[in-house]
Length: 395
Image (cartoon, rainbow, N blue to C red):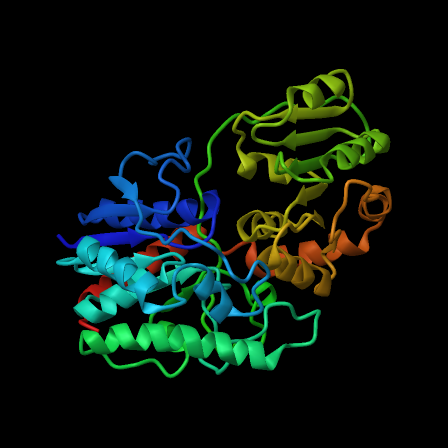
């Protein structure tokens, strides 16, 4: 039996936990002892098996973010404690303390855990969608591909983060990194698809696809009505939410809206309409096959699940990673994005295009034909196999 540490350091939301959990449960079923280190300690309480693996809060750095709109991975790291040694040294020390004596570290966006493993000689893997796994080039690629790349800023950020990282690696006798992407060489497993990779110039890579999340909840009853069925998975803080709901209601089609913590006044407003608003957990896997159109914020997991079900998407990105994913979906013709958004944004036209047209549906079905029949349970077993193979190494 091996001791395996599961780590999540950067980012937010249930997706990180729902990626680590099924991998952890598969490895637990094989007899290994696991522990979760989570940036958000109480996330994903309603997922099956969520309480079967011990959890604790992850070591993280909390402080000023000098780059509110980071241009590349270097600036992301500087925002999270990699700006100077005084910030990073205690973060690395905390991770070293957590994983000392482990047989394997599995990270989902946890570069400090990977670096700690490197200094301790513990085998490690980064298993995530790829946004935080830049290719090994200097500087790490620009994130805002729709803007001119500020090369000098990108180089300066990477040099700053690398200097801090390499100083700490050197203090423990570990070899330095030439690029930030070098941290992931031989350690990355990409849980995405070539069409959704946020680094399209990554080159040759092995893609595993998304893991089954095992979300649970009701299979809700659709509102009565005719026309295409609309399913939406929305954030309650989305600034365009009132206008979006009004536009959906104007379609006069059956709509299921899942929105955790939604304003009760909005629920009451649409109580007797074809728009059914819910903040109760529902089984997305059961709802998606019944829908004709999906609306979400372009999170990787939700977007991929919709495409695997062959459903066209209205995408409402709220941050840069989601914007990149939305652009990938538009590029393959499977959806329409609305960004940036304001309280007065008009959603009627993109909704009409998706509800009445066929081209986006055909493109989404093409994606599903390529990947939707892959055995995701077998893929999860394959990931666990790779983890066990890594257990035999000491690198």
